Length: 382
Image (cartoon, rainbow, N blue to C red; front, side, top):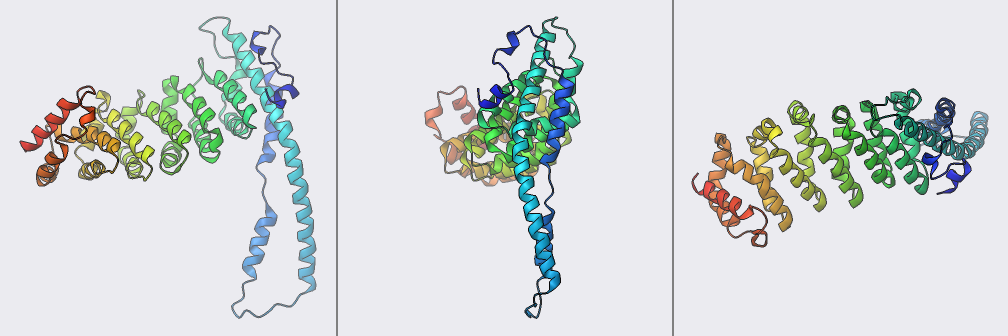
């Protein structure tokens, strides 16, 4: 373990110790008091920008030096020195803050483990429950995200054990903070993603994740913007878990337009992994019985059909294949709208020619060959 764990006197096998854990409240108070200085204003930067804005002159006449400006320069120099001191102080506080955070998490984990030994139905320890508070969990997650690599891995595992069963319903702000940290610090994406999914064993937490504004405003943009393969795959794991949870069908129907507008951008993304994973997940969502209402609405949408037909023309065979599994749902729908039928009739000949013999190497995969033949037959009968 890294130096910080040694510095706070923690042991890897602390869970096996019978020693009573330290009290959580003093450790929590200490960490939160150290966390506050993290958000520090920079008045000098703002003042400098304001000075630059005011120095723009239309006639470009040189402005002579004045005593007032000299005084301002001296004031700025003082502010520079103060800012430097504050930066040094902040760096020093970070080490102490990291120690406090690790000590807090270790104490909470030990307390919870000892409480859990009293029986499967043991209630959550009141001290551990303080970690879950809405105004506490955010600073803790941000603190974990800002740890050094080795300490961050260890702290993420510790926090995961604290936030797994039994775990209370967590507020949407918890998930907003997690998603924001994943987006801002790609190096934290994997441990924070695992931490996020560990809490989704509770149905109420799936609802909180879906209710979080960051679900649409942060998670989906990460899938369309991140060039990092690990971040993409981890984010898709989170998205898949949330969209296949029991609260998801009702949420999808209530937020259909907002979700599929964002998801459409994902399917049009230039990144191969994003398009392929996006199509795989879309197919799973549409073919789930619990999403029947959402499926019928989607396959009655002309823009959705056109988007899927465009993906059939993708230069990558694997993406064409995934697009077929979405396209087939439009074709076998017995209640096609008139505009859907019109477009399919107009393109029937090209579609049939395109599908015949396509993806021959996959004919041994499940029922693909039968599905392709059914789609071709249905198109010919239009």
